[in-house]
Image 1 (tube, rainbow, N blue to C red):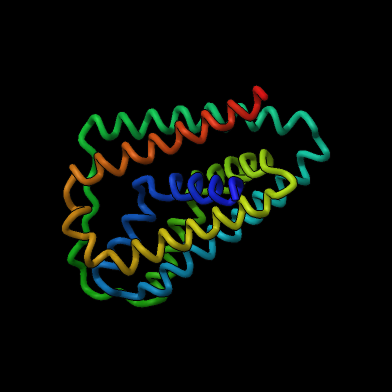
Image 2: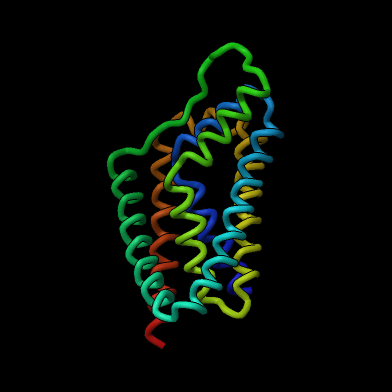
Length: 202
């Protein structure tokens, strides 16, 4: 279960960071426009990328034994810096997510925009293929459970954001709410980094 929980928390922390994709999902949720399609595209894309990361990294690690420690410490460095950036964002006051009052948009346009925000974002590859893939290797031979937890976190997050947006909108429109979000994300990132360091030093 530790692998499953670690995958869930790591994935949730990465996805929950404020960004263009989440702003888009929130906007569609508030507008109640093609929410199911947007949620399915985001969660489905994440599931595919996470699966490729978990499977691909394991195969690469077998062929190149030095890759695991390199990616482990690289992941620790990334999580540490990323957590610090979240704390800095909180210190600066956070950001607000708000929906625009545009007229209705076609399903095709919404779907293409969602896919572009997902697949053209370089961070998604770093998060899923590299970082989550590397983290999953630390839980071998049950790295698949890490992947399942990561995929579930993505699905839960996008479902909650898309369908809960109408209720979250008044809260998430306030920068102060995102201060709390950023602090929580930063703490989780540092906790995962500390756990990896402890494992490496055992």
